[in-house]
Image 1 (cartoon, rainbow, N blue to C red):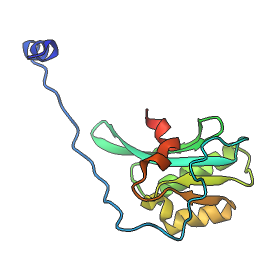
Image 2: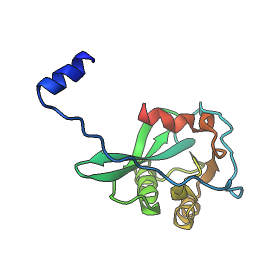
Image 3: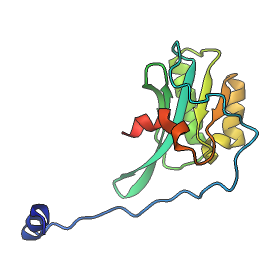
Image 4: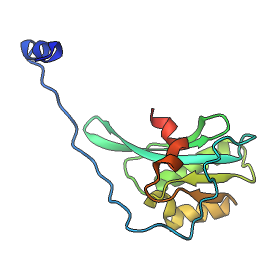
Length: 153
């Protein structure tokens, strides 16, 4: 028995783990959204390539969802949203925050995984409205998710 386990027993402390949370796996690739980034993770200027990701956090007694937008040039978060539900409004709000914070740049590429947050019609319409080029990693390819995995390390 480890020292920590003994100390917890002596102090009558019980570990509480939040319930597990799972997303449904995608059945097929979204072939209508191309993979433009091609693992080129070192853009030459700001606002050239942005990456997005969504994660969930156990806060208090419920799940909160966090969407972030990272400028790959400086590896800094430039937009985020933290609502209660994991719908496309989450990613739309994060993208809108980034777009406004960067003074509505042009010629931006937005790269993400194939999550439903990024393939929804509502999110894609916002991408079209902002004239942003959308790029997605291939299904199940963790090496292409590398730029936004930096956020959770």
